[in-house]
Image (cartoon, rainbow, N blue to C red; front, side, top):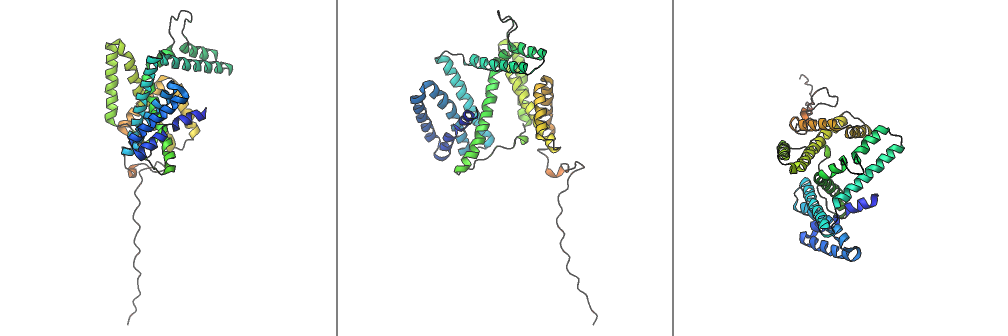
Length: 330
């Protein structure tokens, strides 16, 4: 299970190295040649899937490193290229092969959730809890499908934002792995800032607020735009909730809480329902303007190690006084 995942992450790195050393044109020609070779061995569908999806990611990451636009913008460029290639591949598959890729993806997720519920039932989970979760996965009337299941409908509605977040995570992981690999061949590319220092600017936060409000109004005016409104709302909740999670992690690190306890607290928040996630998002919103993590304050104004008060800058060492000579009377 681990080897295919690592192999897919390593796949864009050769093209990324070609862009850094010899430019974008050489890397594009290499991607075309690789696609033709894959066509001979694995067929057109697998060749398009492997070369057409992962090649744009490697080209975009290499272009960002070669232009020196910075690690965050490079990851965003790679995520945008990966997202466009994934959407094009899904559309081409549905157009040429007449296969509903989205329905197949939803069926796989639902089947996995059913297996998880069966495993919980074998472990002795409460029957009421298992039945409540099964009602979200399966339709209420299996024979006539009177009430559609909640989870498949939610996945279908939120598929755009899930795909966008997935491509962003994939680009980040690929860039992080490429940085450690390319360092061994003489290319020291800049690293992404530490996750605990990530902070959304107030301008971007206001943009998300206005986009969420506009999407909600358009969804109420046009029912066909309800799905777009839900996607924007979930994206906003995820961004601010992630900011709130960073605030909580910083707070626990300063109090030297063990990492295992932090992971358990995060799992509890994820499984506790919607209201704790909304509270976490509110903490993230307040952090944008009040800077609870002290990312924009000078280090000298922060509290000391014991939390008693502000730390003072170290004073300059005192100069040694000149030696005193004894004066003897003549």
